[in-house]
Image (cartoon, rainbow, N blue to C red; front, side, top):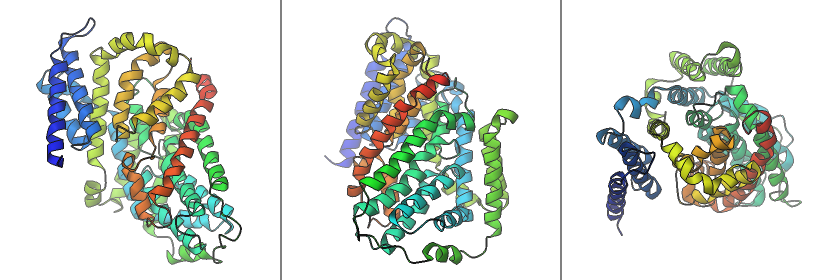
Length: 466
C-alpha cells in the first residue's frame, strides 16, 4: 500500500469513527455534545496512532471540529492556549535556546570533566556529574543531550574503546540519562513537568514541590544508571586506556576567556533558578519568570528573532495546547464522571492499591508505547482510562501522570523516540548505535518502576496518595 493510500484510508477511518460515535444515542449521564466530543476524540486517536499526519496538524483539525460541530464555543475549546502552562512551556523553551547560544553550558561541562580521574569509573562519574549540574539549568533535554553526546564519543575514542562496545555504551548511557531523562525531576530541567502540570489544574506545585515529589525516583534512576554502567558496561582489564593527561583541560582552554554572553547567561540562569526555587515566598508564576528571563536574553542579543521563530518548537506547543484543551473538555462535559462510573467496577480494585496500580500502570504504558508513537498522545489515552478513577481512589493526578510519563520514555523499538535517534546521530552513530542502546531501555524500565514504587511512602507523606 502506498503512503498516500494509507493516509487516505486512516483519515477516512478517523472520520467514520467520529461520525458513528458522535451520532449515537447518549447513554444516561451524557448529552449529545459529549457524544460528538467522544467521536472526535476517537478519530483523533486513529490519526495519532497511525501517524499518517503530524500530531500538531491532527490537533488543529480536532479543535476546529469541536467548534464546527458545537461541542463547545471557541473560548472553551481554545481556552488552554491562554493559560499559564502554555506560557511556561514557551518561556522555558525559548530561554533554553538563548542559554544554548551563549556557550555557557559547554564551558561548565568541560570544567566539571577536568575534576575527575581518567579511569572508566572516573569518566562515568564525570559524565554523570556534568549532566546533573547542567540539567536544572536548561529545559531543552535534547539540547543538553546533543551537547554532551559528542563529548561521550570523544572520550570513547581517546580511551581506545572498540566501536559498539559495552564500555562505550556505559559512557554514552551515563551522559544520556543525566541530561535527557532525569531533567524530568526539575521544573527547569525539562519542558515535560510544566506540560504535565497543565493536565492537573487542581495540583499546585512550584519548583521545590515538584523536585520533592520526584526526588525518590530521581535518586533511584541516578543510582541505577551508575550501577548499570559499572556492571553490565564495565570494560574488561586492558580494554580501556586512560585518557591523555590534560585531555579536557585542553578543550576547555580552546574556548578562551569567558565571554560577555556567557556571563549574561550565567546571571540569568542563577536568578531564574533562585526565583523558581523561592516561588513559595514571592508567588510569581514560573511561566512569568521564564518569560522575563527570555526577554533579558533577547535584549542582550542571545535570542535573536530568527532563533525565536525557528528554534522554539511551535508545532509542539500547538499540540500541547490542544491536548490540554481536550483534557479540560473531558471534565466540563461530564465525560470523566461517566467514565468513572463505567470503568470503576472493573479497575477500582487495581487503582485502589498503589502497590498494584503503579507497576500495572508502568507495564500498561510500556505496552501502549509500542502502538502509540507520541508520548504526549499516550497521555490522552491514559487520562481517559485512569483519570476519572484517581479522585475516588484518593490518588493525585500527579502520581498518575508522573508515573505514566516516566514510563513512556522508552526506546525498545526505534520509532518510539525519534529524539533518541537524533542524539545517537549527534554522537556520531559510531561507538553506540541504536542496536546497542536498545538494551539500556530495559534497565531504564526497571529503574522507573522501582523508583515510582519506592516513591509511594513519600507520596503518601505528601498527601498525593491517601
